[in-house]
Structures are given as C-alpha cells and as structure tokens.
Amino acid sequence: MTSYIEFEGKNIDQAVKKACGKLKIDKEKIRYKVISHGSTGIFGLAGRKKAKIKVSVPEEKKQEKKNDNKKDDRVHYANKENELRENNVQTGKDVLQKIIDSITEDAKIAIDERPNKTIFNVVGGNSALLIGKRGKTLEAIQIIVEKVINKKNEKRSRTLVDIEGYMEKRNSYLKSLAKRLADKCKRFGKPMSLEEMNAHDRRIIHITLKSDKEVGTRSKGEGILRKIVIFPKKSSRQKKEIFQDKVEKAN
Image (tube, rainbow, N blue to C red):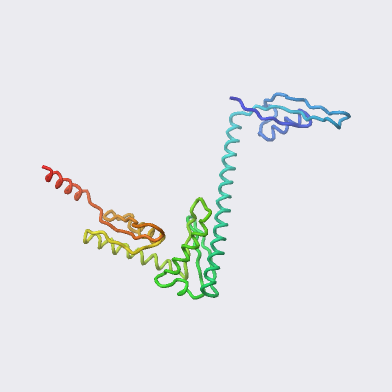
C-alpha cells in the first residue's frame, strides 16, 4: 500500500523543494500530486493560501523513517535511564549523608558508578560506629538507603554502601565461609545452615557455590533477612541406587 506525505509552500516549486529536502529525493525522481496551487489572496495580502502537494513515499524511505523512529526511541529510553540513575544516585547520597552526619562527624561520600550497581563509599569519621558490631549498623544503613531509592521506582536500582573497604573484607570472608561449609556438607552428606543474611550477603554465597556440581543453595524464610541452606546434590549414581531400592521394595 502506497503511503503519502503532504507538503506546503508559497508555490508548487517551494513545496516540491521542501519535500525533496525532507525525504532526501532528487527533484527528477519525486512523484507527487497537486492538491492546491495556492492563491495570493486579495491584493496579495488577505485570504492568502499556500500551495499543497501529496508526495508518494518510496518503500526504502518508509523503512528509513521507521529506523529513524526506532533510533529516536532508543535514544529517548537511554536518556530516561540516565536521568533516572542520576536522580537515584543524588537521592541515595543525600539520604546517606544525613544518616552518617547523625552518627559521626567529618565523614564524606565517594560515588563509584558501575554498569550494574552504584557503590557509595564512606570515608572518614568514626568508621567503627558506622559499621557497628558484626556490621549490623552498616546493614541497617544499607537497607534504609536502598528502600528510599527504590520507593518510587518500577525497576529496582542496585546500590551498595561501603565504609572504609569493609564490604570487600566481608565479601572475602563470605566466600571463604561458603566454600568451607560446602566442603563440610559434602563430607557429612548433610545440609548446612548459615545465619540470617541480607540480600547482598546471600547473593555472594549463591554466586560462590553456583558452579559447584556437588552442592546447591537456597534461601529459607521471609522478609529482608533470610537464612541460606547449603545442601548436597544427589549424583546420578545415587539417584539410580535409590530408584533400584524402591523397585526392590515394591516387588
């Protein structure tokens, strides 16, 4: 089905020139129908009307226009994503600064923006107070900041609050703990439970043991803090033995 676009000008020549420029078509190749030749009106002033033409749009030009529209949509979406992220970062920084100012003095925030998350690094002040016993104060701060940022967002924004590199040390400890308990799980053939953890800590455990074919992990409980269970996976040989036992008992 042929599609058309209308163009106007002071006269037909101007309307054709405008169409050629817009559609990037040579004047010799353009196909159009005249809708109106226009009129100069009374004494060239009142009642003046523009000339109007209807131009048939070639298939390749229609495709180019569709591609341009798709490109514009992608640019618009990317700009919107960037604007949303900038707002989230500023909101998180403002909230975090108020919290740490109420706990200690002279603490500043450095922002580390990564493709999949934003890290708020707190430096200075009394880091021991901000971290708390076994990281509980930092954990509470993390929960508050994340809740405020994602309160009105449809898409969850991943953020992490770190204090003087504490989280890096925490991550190393969790990886070591996960591997140690996984070995224990394999040795005794029994599930191993870890203490209640926040989403970040649970993710570290899950990722650390993801490639281990002998054990699996699952979260247990409800709410923000949940336990993690590391359990032994049954090998194909064990499954076969269990199946044979069931068959023998049935007979």
